[in-house]
Length: 332
Image 1 (cartoon, helix red, strand yellow):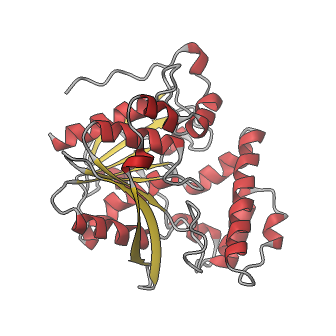
Image 2 (image 1 turned 30 degrees about the vertical axis):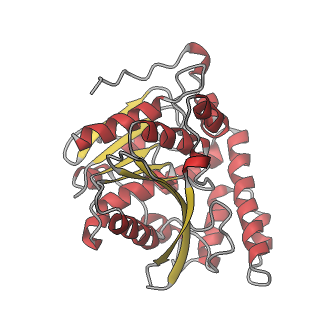
């Protein structure tokens, strides 16, 4: 395998803010169509019937992309309020397809226009239904090694899959995460304290998903008090109190907090990519973590923003090449 070059963005692309904006706004689908890969024509939508942590039925959706000479099945998990079409995810998916892998781009509950499928709302501690979806995919594609790759909150889910999956019979060859949430309380505080445009972006996204949920289930939800809250910490607190089984916000956040010690001791091999200039994932959350134990590769780059890693003016992302390298290495 060709050695992966270091991430060195040109001067015009070194701003963490620009990198974060490009993560979601760069035209990844158009870029990869020019390279001859159009996932929209290569993929088919699928519905998965899963179970939540209480055994209740959950419907999840995704897009499956077969490959004629597949070396692995890579399941990709988007970030909060993203979907199978998110630019950061689409670009990495296309690169993995070009490298010879089948894909499944999974939508989390209440993402990718699925608010109408399940009455109860999404929250970040709903790991069991993601494990249920992955177990189905592992069984359906038993002839292929399974790799899970996630971004931001999806990266947090991915790392928890690596930690808890084997106990449920799920055995990924690798769980890889780009810009993963580690300490959600610190991420909420960083959003409130960060640039005004990023704070407004996240608050607006939260209000939009509440509006879509209320429209999908008329009479079931009243979010009026949530719409008035402008602090990301406090809207999370109100949401936990009103729509989760957790007694406090602190108990809810603890349910999906990760530590370096946990990751090093993971029963599943892991790979992690994060940037020091990520305005929503504090670099200090990764202090003490290195390439050791179960962590096959840990990259903490100076630049990259949140899920960005754009290092070419053609707007290709270095994370695409990093992901291909990680899967190639683990497959030997």
